[in-house]
Image (cartoon, rainbow, N blue to C red; front, side, top):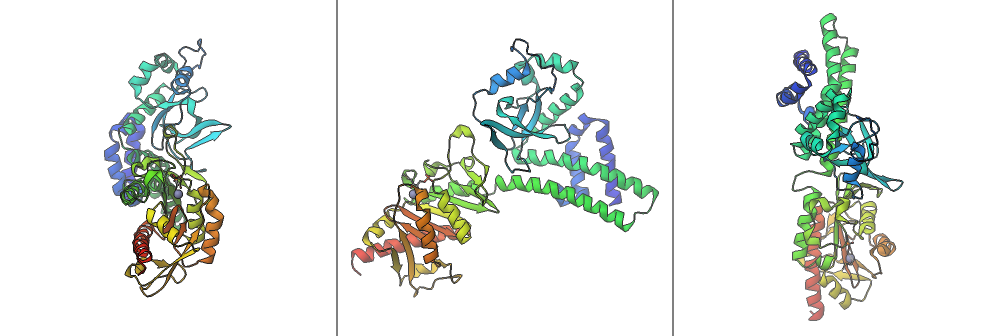
Length: 449
Ligand SMILES: CSCCC(=O)C(=O)COP(=O)(O)O
Ligand SMILES: [Zn+2]
């Protein structure tokens, strides 16, 4: 620990000497920091603001660039932001740790949550009209030539140039890497004081167990903070093919191919930790993209959504999805507009459907017993009446859940079916088993066998 501490402190000293060196030596430094600190590391105003006829003040220019635009920014995007008397400053759109949101409307004014580059991790909610896409130093200076003179007169000149250099460095990365790298610097800044303290203590006196444990605890807290920021971003977006951002579009394409979500009908939602991912409404479900999804928590509070430019809204099925999560502890819920469900409900006017004697019954999970059905057991699935809007199904859906504690599906007459499971795989498998059972049951009913 003491040796790795010395190594890090030397590096911190190098960085203190040259901020530019920090940028160019960053990779090497990161590697050493990783080596020294282990796995936890990985997770881890210029203007005079003169209103010079409104023509070329940076505020006016920025306003002109963004006015009337809807939010087209997302977490991880690099931006130029203008606040108060400060020069336009580079930053990154990152979720506010207090509200878990990166965008909001305050008194009808759209705002984004920004962390500033090279500014001790200061962060703020900024009006969307004060923000524009990060381009690069040359580009912004060409776009707003007055910045050059204003910055050269400003006390913040050095700091601004370093911020821009950091931003250009970060802009070259992909979003995940960018956010990790940005917070890795925070880790470094927070730890350098601990390291300095540790080194000076080790050179003058023996560390007492209580000092050692206080340092470790402090270190642990810093690690935890970085890790939780990192984890938050990883939960919302990541490249794993099993992440809801990739699963939902893929599953929708499969369901479309089976004729279950045609003509924009149907929908899907997957729970990932405590985040509920929900498909958009009224779109061709087979064409959904990873960044078309909505994310909310179990209380129904929005966490993240697609760019406003996309003009998407959350699935109308959301109230039923939430019922399945809250009442049945589902891990995923699927809504299909399958023709076989509609046909079967026409052939079966009762309020429930009974199926027995088929092997595929074994693929259905009995939520009451906590076991899969045996093929000699009778499967009973509730049927509720359709309503004008999906949300008006909630009351009867809840009644059906109470009356049929074993069921993992509810049929909606003249409409389709909701099916859920403890995870997306079980929900999908059960959907396939139900559809199979329904086809055979239709055949049996038609042929009276
Ligand atoms: C032609 S679809 C009618 C609405 C509907 O029943 C449905 O399932 C669509 O839900 P969405 O997720 O697109 O809001
Ligand atoms: Zn529907």
